Length: 316
Ligand code: CP
Image (cartoon, rainbow, N blue to C red; front, side):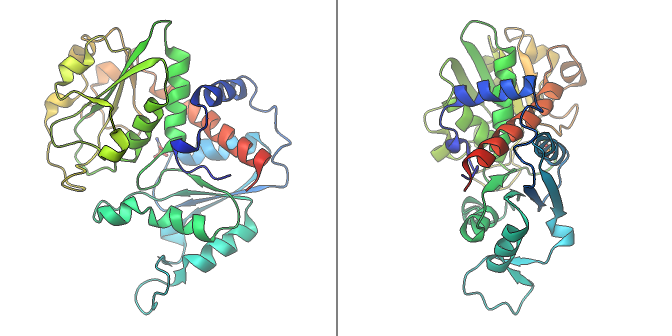
């Protein structure tokens, strides 16, 4: 079993309930991962993913190997048949096969380059490991998705939702750097699996996500209108998908402020972190009692633990 995408979740409701059960007693399966090794390969920076996934593995009794691939590993070649007389030193074919001998599960973080849309959509790094590794592969944020984050988001919403049908709003917010679409993509896919929630995406015109992912999700270009009666506000920046990887809007009016939150149904504020304060969200919102960002990060441990637990039980 691999965990690459939200589409690997057969029943979101079931998975969320299982994760909440793990949260109540995280050490219950401490022996499940005995003598098993998780290899975590980072092609990009991380705080939460690195520590929560490692913590999850430790809760299951696993050993963990971590490697910062970009600074510590050889430059990898991903093209089959390449004549390797340029910059790359090692082919993914050997690298993935070798790492598979040391690890029982390989978890990978490899962001979008945001230069070549086709290459990013092809998920070069994670696809290479899927092709040549002989052990299960886990996505710790790839070019187009961050499914363990979205599973943690679903857990967080389940803990905080009230009895009525909740309205969830994914809002774009400004950011000084070009960011990938991975987090909003997986959040959209996760919301499409929610059976008892209404979902609205709001962003400036031109900032549409990949339509193959958003499908028939509701898009409202007026952020104030989208916020009306919302129960959850999920803020995230992403760079332009059409004008690929570019920043074409920095409008500070899209920052989530207390004034905007006042339009909602006393909504909880969510963000996957790290967050740029007073750019994405005003201090007064992220520091308010309605902010659940710290609990959201805590739930990363239980989403990762559920994924690892399922793989340990099911194998390849
Ligand atoms: N949300 C998240 O994935 O955080 P890190 O980038 O710090 O791992």
